[in-house]
Length: 320
Length: 280
Image 1 (cartoon, rainbow over the protein chains, first blue to last red):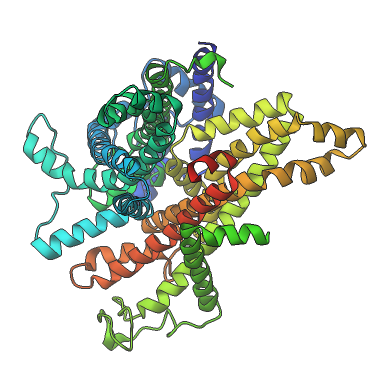
Image 2 (image 1 turned 180 degrees about the vertical axis):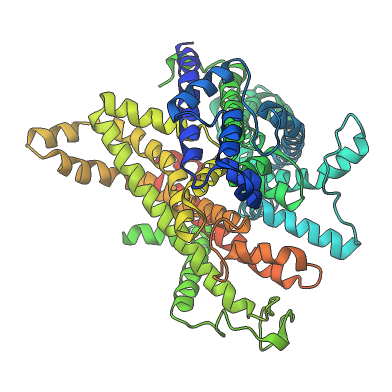
């Protein structure tokens, strides 16, 4: 358990590092946020008015003071005020998060639902025609950027069927389940399909690895059916690399998928962060990056925990 | 070296990947040398948005520019960004990882914790932050991608370097009185070439992907210069009228990344002793 303990201790330290890095980075961006917020109207303000606005958003102090105040706020779940939205940063983030979370879950579901069986299937027919077909499909899929897949889907739908994907305002699942799924199905497919390829590849190679292990041969010679050996004996061990890969990918997806959100005009976390950076909305960038990094690290920690559950042979403390 | 090449050519995905990458490099060089069918910036006003024809194999865009010529220049642009960024990242990562493993102690701790912080960001977010600070452009995207990939190279190098450091031949070299820089560059680096080569090839695929994404968002190469991502983002509103604007750059990106992925797979099979078993 010492490994997990060490992970837990370094966790806050890494988060602290992230907070410093993003705090400094966004302040190195040329231009100031008050001017960026007001656009051309900034010229109409008197210096006093600008000063008052800066004070309202807490931007009138030196960097170390600003950082200290912000950090104290973060510890009590107060991420500050967003200059562009005029709302608390946490509210802005939590408004966008459901869409991002749902998109991430749906696309993981698609990727694992297709990729895992496909990979196992290919592994059991190693070097045969069907294995080759799966491998070619996976290789091409892995080499196609998600936004290219998204654009192709939109093109095929609009040119072939005259349908355009529902864009714009996000429809929450609780309000209109069908409308919500209709809105998210194409972006989820886009993200899911590009990840399906990776899942297929990794589950195929993991399965091949496990199938050549001694215990699999033992199980076979004891008379277990081929089916039982594959699903019951081999698969649980082959799942470990799949879990790692999916965990990392899920962590990424929780940070928002900027490109796919852009293509399908969805108001997710990714576009919000991009806009916040471009608008120099300091508090929003700091808060959302911290939020994303936190999610990312928690997911990675959970993946490590999942190892122990999947493979009792791993005792994290004794690992090299 | 010859044996290595033979094995690469024997490997079917190595062969295909190699041919693709070589072809792309030749296209990029030809475009740089001015060997495009037309001037990529020349606007044939009367021939705007024409489909593929004998005169314009891949059609023309909304300004009447020849898509094939722009595609060739775009491939050059993408490869320039990919190779430079991965080159910088490999160099920086090797230096950091090697010195971290060798000197250990405080330096190791400092370097690796910093890498932990950088790895806590999703890659594209880190690249976006970097671009926001420095401003969009081709050079910035090179630096941004290099910045994102440096921690990965640092980790790839540090692990094997640590175990190599404890090996007898390193001790022997030290007793002979070899200088630190000699041991690092001769004994350690030579043994790190294999894992680095695999990582570099896969990083090139990823870098190509990121570059096209960044320029698609308008944060990479700036118009009127041409890049594959930029061509795609121009095609978005015209795709029903002019699908060739979408299809050709999309395919070009896909095949380019495919080339590096295939090559990387083959190299891993050949160079990584752990995966030998899977081959046998």
